[in-house]
Amino acid sequence: MIRLAWRYLWSSPLTTALNLLLLTLGLAAVTFVLRASAQVEAGLKRDLAGIDLVVGAKGSPMQIMLAGVFHLDAPTGNIPLATLERLKQQPLVAQAVPLSLGDAFRGYRIVGTTPDYIDLYGAKLGQGALWTRPMQAVLGAEVARTTGLKPGDRFTGSHGLAEGGGAHGDHPFEVVGVLADSGSVLDRLVLTDLASVWEVHEAHQAANTEADAHDEHGEQREITLALVRYRSPLAAAMLPRWVNAQDGLQAAAPALETARLMRLVGAGTEVLRGFGVVLLVAAGLSVWVALLHAVRARQGDLAMLRMLGAPARRIALLIALEALLLAGLATVLGLAAGHGLVAVLERLLAERQSLRLGPLGWSEAEWLVPLLAGGLALLAAAWPAWRAYRLDVTTLLQAPR
View (cartoon, one colour):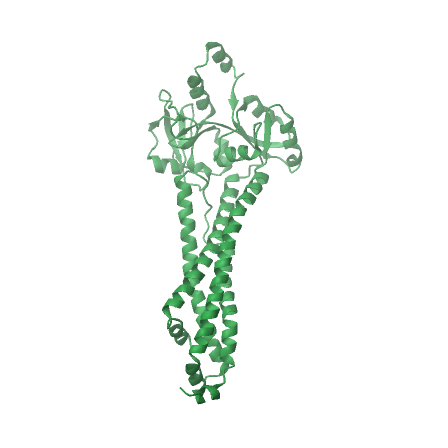
């Protein structure tokens, strides 16, 4: 029956190819949306790394979150170093990790921080060691892979967060370590000590002697952001209010801002999902029409099968098998195309040094794709199969040819 259904399916190759194309495009669009959405969500959760709050200068909470957690935007400004100490003294704060931003190396952001930042993501060293003094740097795995730098090499950063800024040629960094690939945002960062960022920017700004004297006593030091982890659930209600009440400070809750971001992105995915559904409906109607035409054209063959002893239910099953074989082939091609589109998206994001998609072997939602294809095939074959089941063999055999 399967072999016969396959031969019948390809007896009209152009019609079958058109139906296969429509089904494949629809299933590929649905697969892409399901897989990309799941991987984006996995990537966002991975980069959050248990960060409960981001504290920065007054401005947009979304911008603060994108700059401090995902490193996809410019920060809203700097905050005094004393803010970090005040946060650490709060009984509701379990940990506060400072970040100082402002420079980049070949498009990769240079981040002044402490080793606690690496511990947030559970990252490990692949080569070398962590920094022990200013102007030493540890490279993320992707940075090392792209630039070819290794421990012992030197490089200079440029002002700003993109390529093309003014170079700090008189303040080179020494690479002392390379992080192992963690799949997190650390892979595309250059990490160094807070003092390195201060040293480079003091020279860049050409501060006067009096300002330098103040800096030596730590009175004018600044950081860009502080990543905070709560000590108890009570902090989620109280700490953001306390931060926002402080002069010049703004709190951003990554969980809330990420949910907002996913809602904004969701509008685009809904459009693409709707496009896929329209294609699937069109494919289902096309298969339905093709099977009805096939039943009418093969009435003599089907009558002969009945006369040879095939029961009516097997004739109906033959029609359903045609649709299911077409759906099975479209499922394989659609899943392959959807996975290929996600791989292309991942490569484009990597080239633009943007958000990385989370690793995902097989999404639970993707099991809906073959079920959707099979259900659509059976729905399209239902009426043609019923027509084949109800064929009047006697009338067909007596009809003049």
